[in-house]
Image 1 (cartoon, protein in one colour):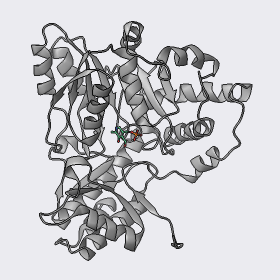
Image 2 (cartoon, protein in one colour):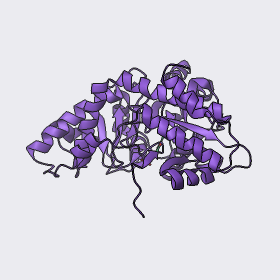
Image 3 (cartoon, protein in one colour):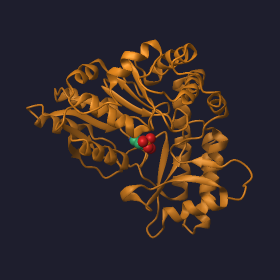
Image 4 (cartoon, helix red, strand yellow):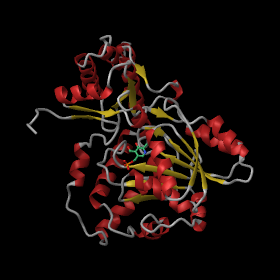
Length: 389
Ligand code: PLP
């Protein structure tokens, strides 16, 4: 590929831009993962990650992508043939259902139109009908990366409680963590699943299970086949700064740095920054006269915005123009919304001027691709960001 001047704009909703501070931390030499220097690092990181999940309980770190942590959550707590209530909010929740089916669970799926998050009332209704408590877990995606819809997790927790149901509550916040508020302990989540390559600003390659006492208790009677994902071998070795197999040492250097950066900025400030960029983006999209994929204003994602194409226009053609002309990658529509929408990522190590560049690229690209938009979207965002809206 010919050299292109200036930075590439990586505006997909993860992997997100990796800041220089993290890249420099990662490039340090790999060390003996059974030696004292590593053990000190591991102990430090295993403590520092807890406040990011807002938990006092263990957070298990796997050298795997988010999909591995999905599987780990299920195989550690459940038994073959168990029923799980899973809510279809988009492509990622759909893939999680497929995974659960493949490993021998029986998902009961609440279908959705991909424009809304989990409906707590529907969860309560399904659980209330399950008098024999055959459903062993409720699985929801916090931030649906395929649509830009964020589910109201505390309300889902209330729905489970209102039904008086003992099911475990599992939440995928692979693209929500460290961008949108998530409180593992306070919200009564049993397993929180996340990954490195989104709000944590790291490259892909590590993923997490934050676990409640109830989930740990369930793991003692779980009968799913597992070895690599076994929580007990992690929890047994982690207190001494060890892992049951070779850890992703360099990404742990990066994670240590990422936790420091997030705490320096302050998690609440990080969330407010994401909300502000999301609002500026939505103002631009509305000014263009385009629709936002998320239909419920309570469920707007602070991480990304899904932009719906007018009838007869292909989102992938727009993305191609923007990549070719402006060297910016935007997220494609996935699964059943392929070509119907594109996704603007505004997460991670991201600031006002990066957002202005991103929206400028979108506005120019939409026009060059012949999509009938009104101009002034970037101006609407600038007015909002400068406090002159
Ligand atoms: N869940 C969500 C919400 C995601 O956004 C992703 C990936 O983008 C996954 C699960 C799958 O994670 P991975 O691709 O890291 O395996």
